Image (cartoon, rainbow, N blue to C red; front, side):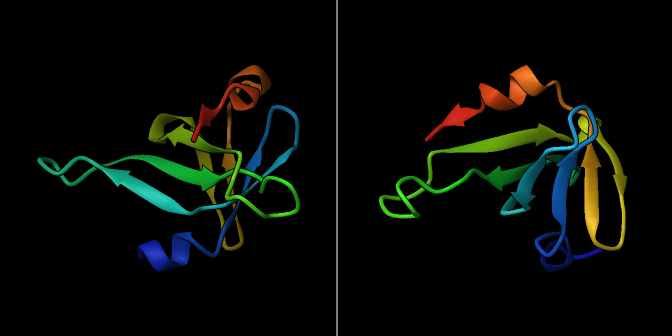
Length: 86
């Protein structure tokens, strides 16, 4: 699977069935070539102006399944609400 194919998939949390968004980037370990996490940009601030509010960094171990259209992740809702601030 290519990174461009991952970017077309929507990420959904199985804990609360919340849509987190689409994959924006992928974090790799340069030494091993293994994928460490997917990064999902958060919702925009003030109707999309002034950039984005936060981003979700979802470790590879929290990915449950990658389907044709969606990626299911198992992340506690508290961890999602305390996502990394930009």
